[in-house]
Length: 364
Image (cartoon, rainbow, N blue to C red; front, side, top):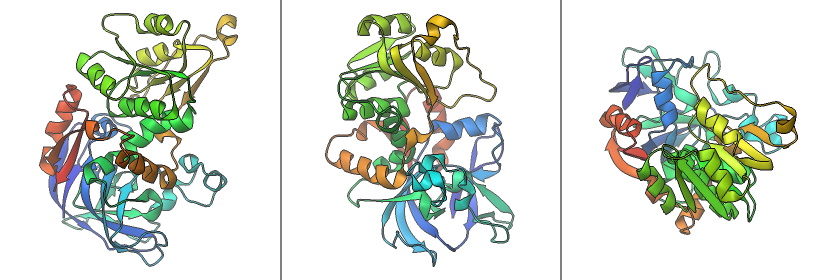
């Protein structure tokens, strides 16, 4: 099968023929119909986070099940599924409490010693599979715990981005922050995840959602997703403007970029008793300075790191698919273009220039 392989840090993606194994145990073989280009995969190929390379990346996938291992219990051949990079065992205290995103045993979704590699190069050597998914390929071999069955009438391109961009952004507002009716929200960074944080806040009932970015085009997009106010932080002090608009600060402030400067801004945006959330993937070594003086402590504000929107993928991904089909969740506005597997580097360059929200591979 054809796959786009990340060969090393700073080397981009190379499309070539690779081999994929047959499913064993609880593995599911998928014909990939759509695979989204998330910024996180770009970070992995541009920075040394310690990920195994060469590897097949790609973690926003949707497709059709073509084969299952003998121990698969909840997925059948012919099902339409969406993948998610949350890896959970299903048996620990966190999993049994519904907090699968906190599972301390992510390797439970991978093959064990002596079971061989799921992916191999044409010469038979082992090939890495990022987050147990490896979606930049014609097929993917994935543990059933990392897949959610979705309705068959949702388009594949829109379904694919639910697995990360939607789950992370909307989940941050709905699950992590627990936004309630009437709450006020600020979102710094209006890419794919930020736009979904706006969507999630509105679904949860927020009365005011303030979008902050440095690109007017992205702020216009934020309006189409329901932002009630927009701030271009190139032109004005975003903290001062948020405090002015809300008469003292928001209930919840989300940072979706991963920069120390914007993280420190987000910490200053909530009202007394409000909350700040770090969602963006920062580069290795990034640090943030927090005020710990008595006046800061008496504000009773909190700062929380959020991974994957505190998502329970088996519950949340089908729910987001239903919300889209009901016209209550905007996914069409997230899919900027559909591309071929040979256009990944070009599409990521467009993402870095701010020209697209999400590119999705639909031609392999």
